[in-house]
Amino acid sequence: MKWYAGSDHAGFRLKQLMIAVLKELGDEVVDVGTLNEDSTDYPQYGQEVGKKVVGEPGTFGLIVCGTGIGISIAANKVPGVRAALVHDDFTAAAARAHNDANVISLGARVIGPGVAESALLMFRSTQFAGGRHQRRVDLIEPKP
Ligand code: RB5
Image 1 (cartoon, rainbow, N blue to C red):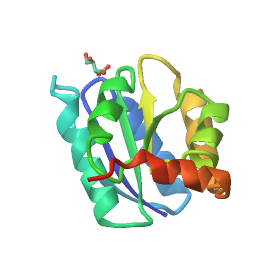
Image 2: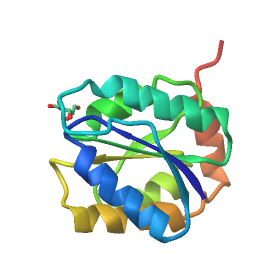
Image 3: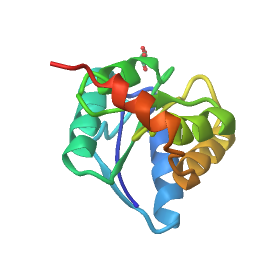
């Protein structure tokens, strides 16, 4: 699997840990930043990851900020992005199976690294269920 990863300063450490987990599994991960814990603004990283994922179908995004809220809001402004704020295995599985989420968002100040890793692995291994969920996902994108 190929991933694009991004975070602000608050999410930097958890992002690095999650990138290491994915690489250990053989996945390719492109880190769009931030690259340290200096204060920075989350929207640019959420939107950058979103653009990359939409521009390369089949790839996934991993975004992290303090809560996972701001960066997921930013990513979801990019048409075609379905960024899901995930807190545990249950929300990770539902995000993929029901929402066909293509970006996982984590809150580094909300969950610890163990829960985050478990949720990421669940997100990674869960397939979209399709069926009635496909109709609902199709309804998400705004019509012109
Ligand atoms: C940064 O202090 C914090 O506001 C940010 O990481 C995130 O939690 C915003 O949603």
